[in-house]
Length: 241
Image (cartoon, rainbow, N blue to C red; front, side, top):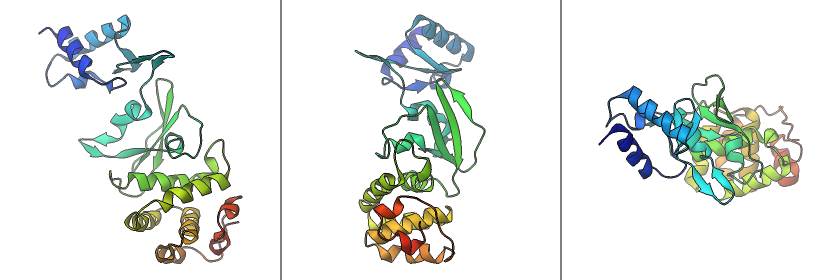
């Protein structure tokens, strides 16, 4: 089978919106330059679409036009290394998914232990947020919630009160084990995040998890989160104003 035929056959088997590079074919075809030329020809002819230099995707056509890849596909290579998870979607990318806002942003934020300068990829600006905890597949949903608590003032098109109410509902659905893990992970977050998490857990009647959070805070420090007290009757106990 010719290189172009092999590439076309392989692409046909990719799901719509899947982002790929020449490396997706490299195990079978050892001619890197030939692969890149073939992919560029296919992009020029409209058979595939180009996301950014060296990155392509299989577009999905709808009655409303061509769909772009989802944000995970756009940045998946930045969140994994040698089969190990090294990053996760956070910030604007996750606020919408968690029901905290209806706004969709062209900025993709990634949590990583080691950050790097921002970059552009297609229409997206990709920024990195430092995560001090070890990142695992299991704790990513908890880190995303904690990040939302940390940056609650920056969630667009909403209020702190509404965001607090929504996050309270999300945390209420977690298992006791997850709540315990969240308290442990919160130790590496700023005091304001720990205070807000503590107030939410206390509001939910989960005081068994709050002692460690309370002990980690300076009792005379106050946290300025306007509107949080309207969603949490326990806000004052945690010096949240």
